[in-house]
Length: 163
Image (cartoon, rainbow, N blue to C red):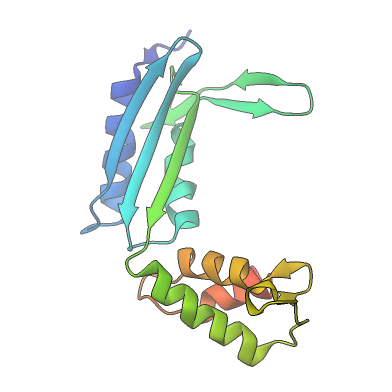
C-alpha cells in the first residue's frame, strides 16, 4: 500500500515542480485542510498562462469529482517514479494579470474591429455569437500570453482555436 503524503508535503512538491518549469516566476502556494479533505491553491501574477500551470500543478491532485454521480474518486500520484497517495483532493490555479482593465478595453476594441458584432441595446451588450463582447474581452485579458499580447488570446477565446 502506498504511503500517504500530507497536504504540506504535496504543496512542497507542487512548488518544486513549478519552480523547475517556470524559473523566475513567483508562485504563492497555500494548502488548506478541512473536514472533507484538503486542497492547494496556486496564485501568481502575469507569467505563464493558467493552462500551462494547471498542466503541472493538477498532477498532484489525488482526487477528482464526478458531477454526474455526485461522487469523488481517488488515485495515486507519481512522485519520482513511485506511486504515492496524497491527502490533497484538488489543486486550484489562479492567475492575476497586471492592468487587466486596460487589457480588457484593448481586447474589446480588437473584437469589435475583427468580428461582425450583433448590436445590443447599449454598447456593453454587443454580442459576438452567443457571448457578450465585454465578457469575451475580460476572458481574453485574463488569458493573454506571458508577454502580454492579446493575439493568442483572441484565437483561443473568441475563435475557440486551441491549436
